[in-house]
Amino acid sequence: MRLADIPEVPRDEVFALTADFKADDHPNKVSLGAGVYRDENSQPWVLPSVKAAREALNKNRDWNHEYLPIHGLDDFLDVARDLILGREDTSQSPVVSIQTISGTGANHLGAAFLAQRLKPRHVFISSPTWGNHHLIWEFAAPDVVQKTYPYYHAPTRSLDFEGMMSTLEAEAVEDDVVILHACAHNPTGIDPTREQWEALAELFKRKKLFAFFDSAYQGFATGDVDADAWAVRHFRHVLFPRDSTAEGPQGLCIAQSFSKNFGLYGERVGALHLVLAPGTPEPGPRTQLLRLVRGEISNPPTFGGRIVQTILSDPRLRAMWDRDLQTMSSRIKRMRSLLRQEIEKHPGVGDWSHLESEIGMFTFTGLSPAHVLRLRKVHHIYLMMSGRASISGLNEKNVTYVADAIFEVIK
Ligand code: PLP
Image 1: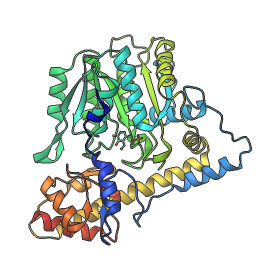
Image 2: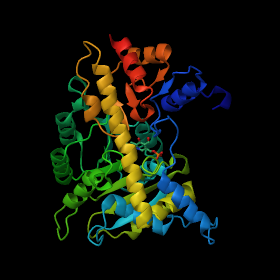
Image 3: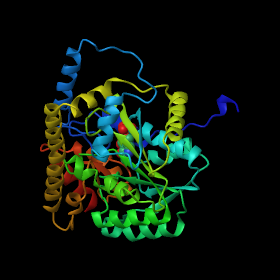
Image 4: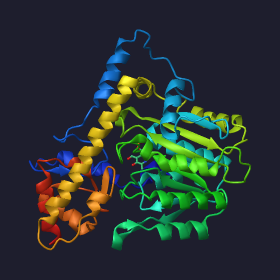
């Protein structure tokens, strides 16, 4: 093919939105696009725990810039694994952990590995989902057929649990991969209840489905890292119980990102954890993963991993980080209720309680593409065409402006 004939790719929606927002010089402009935390002045926030860890690292005279091993920084991987899986004896179900280029890299590595070694017929992706899931599986696993499962029930603005269960029941076959958002589903902000997670885990066990958890918001949903890891840990306990020889899936995996919960977006810190069924020898999967990493990035970057490891292994910094999570998640919760309150002040707008019941960084507003375009053109408020709004772009100063603008476009 001639390079001159290559078709142009449309801009990625969320990055294009950010660029257009930056170029807009209207004084009241508001960005509700990118999934990044902003403080009450709409500024990026460096977590105090991260600042303290940076200072601690700078004091360390042994600091150098050597390559890490292919799998990454051991001390980082230990604390990263414990954060998501809890401090457990892993002897029953071995865990292989590999440091990755953030959550995106972990999704990619997991997809490439499973496509080559598990060879599932299908990968099931929630509808809707984080847009990159489709692209990552298209690139890393071109032979795996992508299917979607219903997730969002628009008329009731709630989880389409029936649709999700019945699709997986009818269409998924043994070893199929199902991507699940560990908490704070992007873009809907709606998670299954614990009872629903329990039913899903039973289904995965019976049908031997491979759960692929995408964990990008641990600590962001509730402010409590253990509560936000509940679904992952429950799946592990149910699918791979200690002392059980019952047949189940071959494993599960977790793509873990530290972008949001540590505010380390640009440092690209993440990990892939592959939990294997009890009795599975781990050298095969581990060395195949290392081979993939070697061919793709050779070895991961050091700085972000050292920050996360420093915080999670020092009780004082860990307590600071817990407070930082509370600061972020409680500000987001407060903005959710303020936005609801300010919208519902207007006559005839109906019920906006979903703004408060949804959790995490995003809300699915229910606004149509026409509403979204008008918000942008007339009011200089930027959100995704799907109606997804990133709540962290709101603050005490702009929330009434945004609520009034929403009223203006829907009335
Ligand atoms: N998964 C989900 C659901 C996300 O929303 C994101 C980021 O927005 C990611 C993964 C990966 O993010 P990163 O590569 O920055 O860690």
